[in-house]
Image (cartoon, rainbow, N blue to C red; front, side):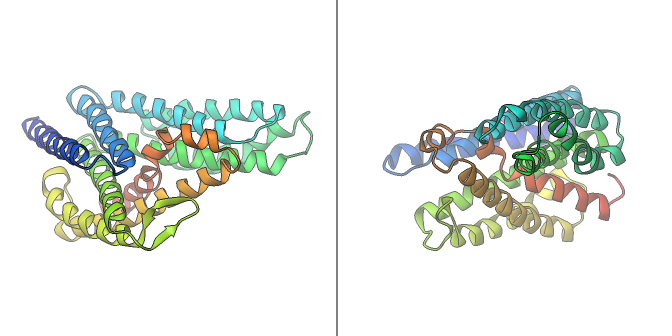
Amino acid sequence: MNSEMWTLAAVFAALSAVHAGFWVVRRTQPDKDFASISHRINMWWGMFFIFALATLFHPIVSLLSLMTLAFFALKEYFSMIKTRKADRRIFLWAYLSIPIQFWWIYIGWYGMFVVFIPIYVFLFLPLPRLLNKGTVGFLRSVSSTQWGLMLMVFGLSHLAFFPFASPEFGPGLVLFLVVLTQLNDVVHALVSLYFGKRKVVPTANPNLTWEGFGVGLVVTTAASYLLYPYLTPLDPAFGFWSGMLIGVAGFFGSLTISVLRRDLLIGEDGKAETRKESHLSRIDSLTYTSPVFLHVIRYFFDFM
C-alpha cells in the first residue's frame, strides 16, 4: 500500500506541474489553439481520479466509471450516424451489451470477455434489424453499429480488465498506459502546432503531422523507459518497447477516430463544431492502445 501511495503522489505531482506549465504557456501565447491539449490534460485528471479511487478502495470503482464512459462514447457515436427508425432496436441491443461485457470483466472470465463482442454480438446483431424491418440500409446499419461497439466498448473495456486480471500490478499498468497514451497525444499536438509541416490526413485532422508522430514516438518511448520501474513489473527491454508500442498504437487510434468522425459528419458542419470537446476526441487513442497493450502483456508475461 505504501508503494501505491507513493506512485499516486508522484503522478499527482507530475500532473500538477504539467497543468501549471500549460496554464503559463496558454496565458503567454493566447493566439495559439491549445484546445486539443487542454482536453488531453483534463482527460489525465479524470483518469487519475478514477484509478486513484480504484487503487485506494476497490477496482469496481474504475469498472463502473469506464462502463459509464463507454456508454457515453457509444451514445455520441450513434448520434453522428444518419439513422432510420428501423435502427433503434439494434441500437438498444448494442447498449445492452455494455453491462454484459463489463460483467465478464467483473467475474474474471477472460475467454468470454475477449470474444463476446467480436463474435457473439457480431453474430446476433443482425437479427433485431432483420426481423420485420426489411433489408433497406441493412449493411450500413449493422456494420456501423458493430464498428462503434468494437471501438467504444470492446476497446475501452480493456482498461477495466487490468485491475481484475492482476490486482497487484493492474492499477499501476493502467496508470502507465493512460499517462503514456495521453503524453504521446499532447507531444504530438504541440510539435504539430509549432513545427508540423507535413500533415498526415489534412482533410480529417490538420493537427496530425509526421513531425508530431516522430517526436511523440521518441518522447513516449523515453518516458516509458523512465516510468516502467515505478508503475510496472516489466523488464528493461519491455519497458523500452512498450513506449514504442503505445506511441504507434495511439497514433493509429487517433488517426482512425479522426477519419471516422470526419466521414460521419460530412455536411454537418454545425455538429462537427459542437463535438470538438467530445468524448471521442478524448479517448480516441485509448481505443487502440488499451487492447494492444493488454494482449501483448498477456502474451509475454504470466502475471496477467
